[in-house]
Amino acid sequence: MEDYLETIVLLSEGDKAARVTEISKARGVKKPSVTSALTKLAQEGLIEHERYGQAKLTAKGERIAQDVFHRHETLRHFLTEILKVDPEIAANDACKMEHTVSPVTSERLTKFVEFVLNRPQGEPDWLKNFNYYLEHGKFSKECVIKCQRESGRKG
Amino acid sequence: MEDYLETIVLLSEGDKAARVTEISKARGVKKPSVTSALTKLAQEGLIEHERYGQAKLTAKGERIAQDVFHRHETLRHFLTEILKVDPEIAANDACKMEHTVSPVTSERLTKFVEFVLNRPQGEPDWLKNFNYYLEHGKFSKECVIKCQRESGRKG
DNA sequence: TAAAAATGTTAAACGCGTCTAACATTTTAG
DNA sequence: CTAAAATGTTAGACGCGTTTAACATTTTTA
Image (cartoon, each protein chain N blue to C red):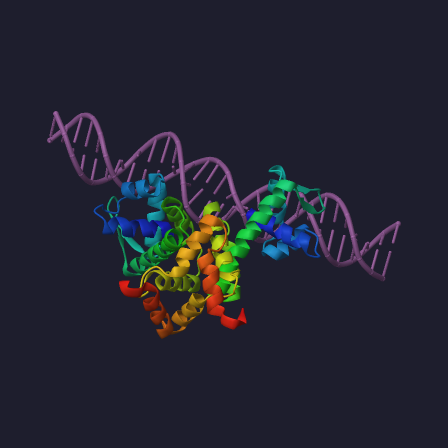
């Protein structure tokens, strides 16, 4: 059901109205599935849906939809920009994971992505080293040296 | 279904035999659910299940079960040791995410966790800085200074 | 070894989200 | 304005994993 909310918010923010056919296309699902989903969401007070008309998010629905979308984006950014997963696969994975991640994890991941990407000076050194590690399967010399330096006489 | 395989592998490796009642307790599910799951897994050639007896993984089943377990552990480590999510919540989240993560993402995450935790010199500085960021909601002075140093005259 | 307890299976039902086929409504175009 | 096309809904079915209730088998124990 969360997926429907997300789709509705995306359509509403875009140029398309959140109608059955559009939602159906967007979600890759037949129209009766949409109708029944909308009926349920309306019963739960998350959308308003007039027969043969548009779906509109209520305040509560909007809140939840934005929340799901936020989880989606956080996961997607993490996957593409840190783990360097192919964008398409990342979007796909994010789409599935967004529903299973607990609030705490979501919040931590958000902070993590912020921490890594919004630092005062951009992409950190260690992320570059991770990319080296990804490509070569071992730590770069630079990385090892840096580790040794950082750990001082403890090493 | 993957969850059943995982449970079977864990019971088999532990002291308990993989019998209906044990699996039922472990998964928090009634016994008929287990019976029907085992029947399906047997049909797919992932386990052998003699009526009223134990479930045993086939080679193929073992491979898949280990794979799921590996995804689980990778996710769990990432959540607890990097994002510092509470162990119980982390285990829970891992349990749900392990089924939705694509092979590529799983592999990258594994490498990432390795990279962070199995470095030559232990937990890296930046992870400590992330912990500071988690607690205080801002970058530590040390972190900012380091960033400036690293970026040199570009900054 | 027979009764009791534990364990396992079967049958029938449910909720969920989906589908197809048929029907209803609205929109569009001639 | 009306016929055709597009859009939306309803009814009935399916697969999935689950449940309860009843029954079958095995194990324990007295």
